[in-house]
Image 1 (cartoon, rainbow, N blue to C red):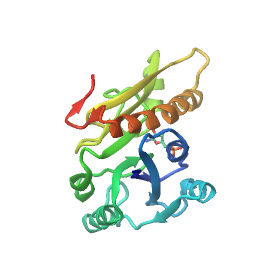
Image 2 (image 1 turned 60 degrees about the vertical axis):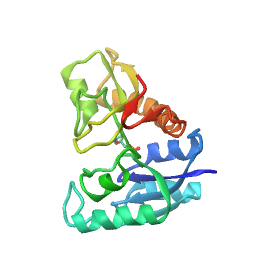
Image 3 (image 1 turned 30 degrees about the horizontal axis):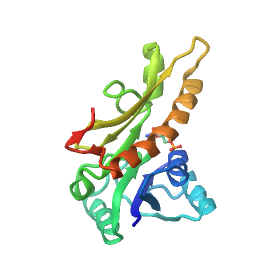
Length: 197
Ligand code: GRF
């Protein structure tokens, strides 16, 4: 039996596409939800033949309204979604979505966490002049880009890099490790309370 995955995205949706086309084990991307009517991810969903939906997130810019977050959570629960994957959702999740899906809620972040949480992680790493950057898939908890880490991939920073070339190479690795982490989750190799080390 396939398990339903919901991807929540605000932007271009390249990680959504990677999850839709990648080997995610028994999980299968069932729906894309977005808080942005102009998200590129909506076009990708149409191309891929995956159901997609814009849902109003509330009046705030970087978080959900409590009522709206409850509506999103109920929608996903009613649909029988097993796993929620954040893929460039530009909003923090602290309320009903986290309560409903803790331990079944993943995020991808373009840095080697716990370094460089928050916005423009690639720019933060580049400006810090780190020699090794990378990306992380982790379970979501109530912090910002915190929570047990499932997979990471390192990306060397080249002398010729600028912020954007580094970000592009990190993104290539994101597309690989997100599907792998989802597969691990469904195989029981990654569990919120006990991430395999
Ligand atoms: C990715 O870099 C992801 O790590 C971050 O937001 C970006 C989303 O890119 N959370 P895309 O929309 O998946 O192309």
